Length: 416
Ligand SMILES: *Cc1c(COP(=O)(O)O)cnc(C)c1O
Image 1 (tube, rainbow, N blue to C red):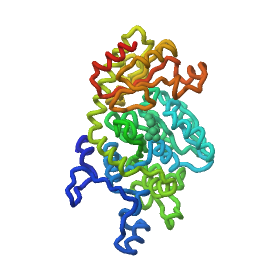
Image 2: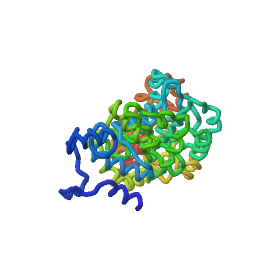
Image 3: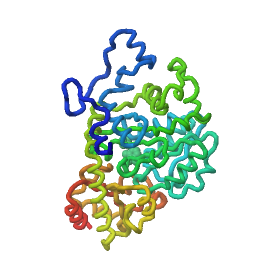
Image 4: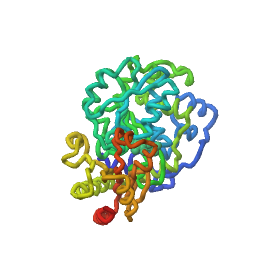
């Protein structure tokens, strides 16, 4: 089956009420047939519902659908995108290990990797995703993961997938790709050889700013890499499950361990209600990402011709640094466009005059959004630091919604 069909049908067989939509199983626990049944479930001898912290039937439908769209062997839903990034890394590392991260990542992934994980004895090194020639030298025996984004938020950088995967495979290191901005309709990182895909479902998957959540997806071939002695936790006994060895018992060892050990103990589980909103979101994601991207390209082209605009950043503009890679790897370039005005004051005035765009630090809503990083997300930085971070004072980031593009262009034109 093709993606749009998978997104609407995978993982749900109508229950006895014949409910057309997947029911919301808003429950914490499930009744066992008897103590023998309970014992079998707890010993992982039989699959079934135990407790919503480690599994829920509504959430399971969302997991199966996103796994199908990303061509995974299995998926795990998490309480947020940051939960997904954290579990992806935490499943691979222990004290003394390091990870290698793209120098263009979502802010939360940078602080997690470089600051918070440091307190647990995990360090991070940066690599350049568009020209990963130094990646191989950065990998050592304690390197457990390489993390990058398919369209980096907010820099909109597109990585050189083939090179990154080639080096990671040569060294036997797991790759994690955050596919939040691109979505599986633009690129499927697993088809390019990436081992683990992570998402913030709070963005395009839900599509209308209603719920926070995330997910991780395991490639069918990740298991081979996890057999190496780089990853002992998948090949040695887990005493918290009577000596279970993940690589022996499961075809989806990464997701199995993330669920059975990490979700069990860290507990950042997705609400079944939010899973249900993500199921609704996936039903129309293919239509929305196309419309967001078409609107965004028209707006990027309009901005590029406006005399007040210093430069426009959108991967599908022909003069963009990422254009070649974007055309090679992406079907859609998403709804995110950024551009530069000449000063802080001018940016401030511009934002004030917009009527349709809302000033919000979020992206991927059905409604158009605008951010001015210098006065919000990056306000602690000095002028010099702003420049080094690639966030000039006059930078504006737009998240183009699903309104009529002519209205959006008129709004932007008036404000300029
Ligand atoms: C928003 C975002 C996250 C974090 O997701 P939350 O659901 O807000 O926790 C991670 N990665 C990218 C690329 C994002 O845009």
